[in-house]
Length: 136
Image 1 (cartoon, helix red, strand yellow):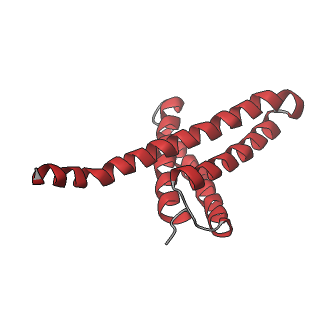
Image 2 (tube, rainbow, N blue to C red; image 1 turned 180 degrees about the horizontal axis):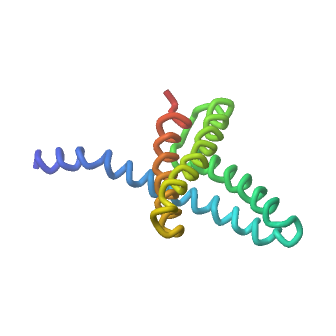
């Protein structure tokens, strides 16, 4: 009986980490869907670059709100967390470009992008969890 409680206590942090990561992916998916809906819904009126830019901004705002309130349950002030979120998101764009730049000459572009997106996802999760929304 003592052993079972110890094992459950040891596994609990890992379960919470996986749950938070899954929630982070879900929040990001909602922001991405919003981005795409705006892109496809407004590209005829504004052109693809402007429509995609508007969609990306709206998607980023959605991602910030969901990550702050639902994924990380942060009480950090918005004055502190929003600029940090912007830094993490901007750095994610650079990480994406670096990974694509390294992998695209070696692998098919779709596989390169999947790997770059995965890298950015893990980077963003770690940075947002430990820095952007860290309440300490």
